[in-house]
Structures are given as C-alpha cells and as structure tokens.
Amino acid sequence: MSSLQPSSLALLTDLYELTMACGYWQAEAKRNEPPREAVFTLIFRSLPFHGGFAVACGLETVCQFLEEFRFRPDDLAYLASLRGADGGPLFESAFLDYLGRLELSVDIDAVPEGALVFPQEPLVRVSGPILQCQLLETALLTILNFQTLIATKAARVCLAAKGDPVIEFGLRRAQGIDGGISAARAAIVGGCESTSNVLAGKLFDVPVRGTHAHSWITAFDEERASFRAWARAMPNNCIFLVDTYDTLQGVRHAVEVGSGLRAAGHEMIGIRLDSGDLGALSIAARAILDEGGFPKAKIVASGDLDEYEIARLKAHGAKIDIWGVGTRLTTAYDQPALGGVYKLTAIRTRGGPWQYKLKLSEEVAKSTNPGLEQVRRFRGASGFVGDVIYDEPLGIPSPAVAVDLADENQRTTYAPHLTYDDVLVPAFRSGKRVYPHTPLTEVRSRTLAQLALLPEPHKLLKDPKRYPVGLESNLHALKVRLMDEVRRRQWGSG
Image (cartoon, rainbow, N blue to C red):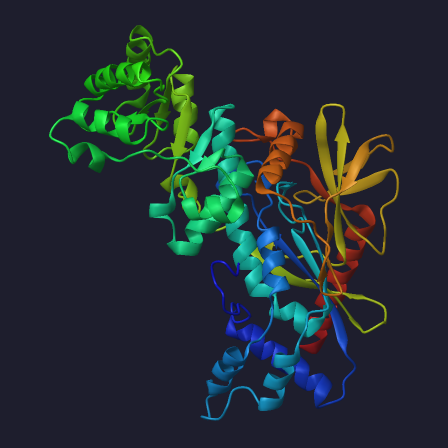
C-alpha cells in the first residue's frame, strides 16, 4: 500500500463512518456511558457472474492497510476544516485529538485469500471497540469487494481455458491506477499465470509478459522488416503480432524471420492473434507453423476475450495455447460490483454478555444473520459437500444440522465422519497482525487446490448447481426468535 500511496489512508472512508465514530466517542467521553464492543460481519448476498462460487481476495491488502492505519496531522487538519450546517466545525477538537492518538485494538478473523466463499458467509469478522470497528467499514469493503470480484472472474476464465496459461492484459482499460494494480493482483490469485502490468509484477513478485504492439509493425515500411528488427532487439522474447495487415501472411513472415532467428542460436516463442476469427485463424496458423518447422511455437490469442468466448473457441477446436485476457477481466465487464455489505451482528458493554443484532428487510436476501459467525466446510471423498454457518459461542454439535439459506424447510445433516475445516482464520489480535505474509504464487496455488475440491456441477459457467450453505440449526432458531422480538419491539414503539 505504501508503495502506491505513501501518505496516510485513514481518510479512505465515507464521512458517515467518522460522524458515527464521533457519536460513539461523545457517548463515552462526555456522557460517561460504558464502553461498548461490537462485532461486524462482511458478507456478500449473491454470487457474481451468475456463477457457482467466489474466490476470496484482498486480505493481504487489508492487512497492510490496517498495519499502517493512523490519522496523520494533515488528516486531522483537513477534518478540522469541515463545517456543519450552521457553519461551525463539524468535529470538535477533542475528538480530533482522540483520533490522533488512536491505535487499533480490534480482533479480525477472515477467509484466507484463495479460499472459496459463498453468499451470506462472512468474508471478514471484526470485533472490538465499536468506534474502531465502524471506522474500518468502507476501506474493508472497497478492498475486498473489488479484489474478490476480479479473482472470481479470473478463476472462471482459467476454468474455461482448461489448463492453458492465461495472462492478465487489462491495465490500459482498468478503472484507474489502483484499479489496474488491484485487478492484476486479484487476477493472479484467481489463477492467471502472469500479467502485462510491470508495476504489479514488481509489487507482488509475479511473472510479467509482453512483446510488441501494432505500432511497432506500422513504424516500419514492411512487416518482415519490423519482425527482423524485433528479432534483433529481443531475440529471447520473440512473439510476433501477425494480424496488422494479412494475418496468415503475417504468420508466414514470422516463420521466415523465425528461421533466421534459429540460425542465430535463438528460438521464436510464437505468434499472437488479436483480431478476426480467432478459431479459424489459429487452425490455419498452426498448420503454417508446423509445416515451417515450428511445431513448438505457441499461439497466443487476445482481443475482447472472456470465459464464454474462450469456452466457445475451445469447443470448436481452436489451436490456441495461451490466452491474453484484458478488458472483460480487469473491469469485471459483465458485473461491475460484488455488492458486499458490512453489518453489525453483536454488541455488548465491554466484558459483558453479547447481545445479538440483525437487520430485517422485506427482501429476504437483505436480512442479516446474528452472532459471532464462523463457517464450517465439510469435505467428503470427492471434495467439498457443504458449508454450515454457526455462532462460535453457541458452538456446533455433531452431527451438524444446517437449515438451507434459500429454503428453511430444507435441512441437511453432516455426518460425524466427514472431514471439515473452519474457514475463517485469525488475521489480527488486539490490533496486531497474526495473518502470515504469503507469496501471491502460493495464494494462486490455494485457489487452484480449492477449485479442485469443488464438484464440477458448481463450476459450470452457465446454470451451475447451487452449493449447499445453511445456518446451523441452533443459530437458525436464535435468528427466528430475534426476528420475532425485533418485530414486536418495533411495532410496540410505533
């Protein structure tokens, strides 16, 4: 984070987080109300891209943000300049002094990057002083929503490629500088082999790939001359872009120049197709390359690709070895936001018993679950079989009984012999990081391993089978009681 933005990021928030924090501070500092602790849970309500899974991503960025979280003097000076409706200061100086001294003391549990996640399951659980928990909402959402979205899109693209390398190509179409950096990072987590983004390569220690553009070709009077010049300049990085004029003639020119390159002791890596009928052109190009003595030369394809187009091309026998995916991956072209939310699920006077909280809505999907939520993922001989959301203080019995989130009349019992893992792991304790630094290539491996455990019907690009997720039966019963209590309380007060 500091490599991209050396100044404080504490103001990376919505104003209402600060005004609420001020209200909590006033309650304790001025009205001598007992300090309160809270639990907030970050979830998303529906899977992106009409898919069957999502890939958790962004936790390392969150950790870096939290490690550097401080209100700097210039932050406080800016907040002091804000005015309320009466023209007076929005924030009193004593509150700003408090912010200047603030050090985080929250506990955070989170889904590791690369793990699979499903609707209504917590991505992150934050507990501690309510003021601190509130201040973190916006930043956690903006980081995790976007990176989880892009990692999920990348995973879908890589599944469509069926093991072929995928390169993230999208920086020039990304949503700004941080959009490009974050998208490249998330694409690697989702399974991409490399990126064209050099800054991302430096920041995250991941492979970078790229050769030349059409401008290199048109800078010369003749295509072969441009290829020869490229072979002289980059003899160990020769992938020739062949579609500037006539694609198949460009392939023949690549073979001609590649033969000279071989005679000089180097080998042409391959060619790139960026337009036209990629399926038919790749088949014809493969024949030309093979006949010309380059059976190992790779064919790289790019140009408005996504998981659906890659799947279509492969189904029709395209001879493409490597996929460069840009705009439709980096911008999450067909779904621009994940829609994650951050909701209060429990509150207490410091040291006292937890009082569980939930939000009701006429839209069932917008009602929230109460408690200190954890997710237990059960696994059988063939992979994952289902998840149970449970409350840590209540615990989870064996056998576990889950009430389906979409149909409370449907219940699933998970036998005691099943292997399981609790998905959320400690990330911060008392404001100090405990989540290990993990190279991005290892996180990518975790994603691939998780996807290998997810049964195929849940990985279909279209109309996937819904993965079973349910509320542990005791938590479900508690939620029903709380909903009734909230309704009675609200109706009574009205």
